[in-house]
Amino acid sequence: MAACAVGLLAGGCSLLVDMDGLGGGAPRGDGGGTGRTDAGGEAFIDGGPKDGSTDAGDAAIPPGPCVPSGLVMQTTLKPSAAVDDARVGSVAWIGASNALALDGALAHTASMSGSVSSHWLRTSGYGATLPARSIVRGFVVQVTRKASFKDEIGDQSIAMVKAGVPGTGKVAQGSWGTTLDTITYGSPTELWGTTWTPADVNATDLGVAIAARGLPAADETASVDAVTLTVHYEPCAP
Image (tube, rainbow, N blue to C red; front, side, top):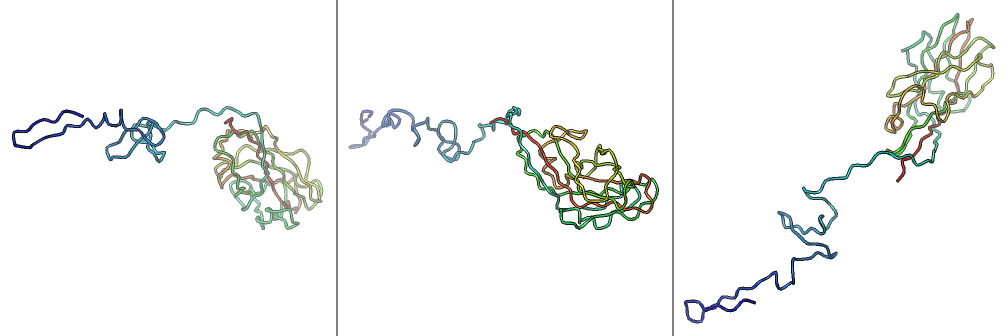
């Protein structure tokens, strides 16, 4: 404590107190860190406020590059919507929503005669929830389908749909049989001719598109009972 200075008025005395000295140094916070205050008087400890938020001088640290974890995972999904998409072909699909589940109810084309192709039967709404920090490795598509007569219907194209648009397609060898059969397209490492982000896969307009063709057909129909999609992905290392 500083000495009492005698004022000019009788009995007057001013006490000059070193407040920093009373505490033995700068104020300290609850956690023992270096204390400070911002312009609004809020206490900060070790460079941050007590509530864990950041002040104007603290910058967020962006995530680093994705380092593959080495663990490839998969999720198998079913569509929640299916429509006739006339961007290709000349023959429409009837009852497109019947392609949502393996239940014997069939989406089918109108009658096909000659070497014609159908519209897209385009499915979507697969509901994927890939982690934002992951790598898309591949897609496997399974289509359960049949033809009304043997050797009359084949694949025009089976394509992955990105942002609502069918891309590069695949074709299975041979014709569709007359009993329901499940055919597999793609692989755990097949990206179907384009690049993918987790956001692309999680989007509601991700889908699978199916177009059939006559071999040639003579008043034939193509039918699809169900479509499933398996996504293979690799999370980033922690």
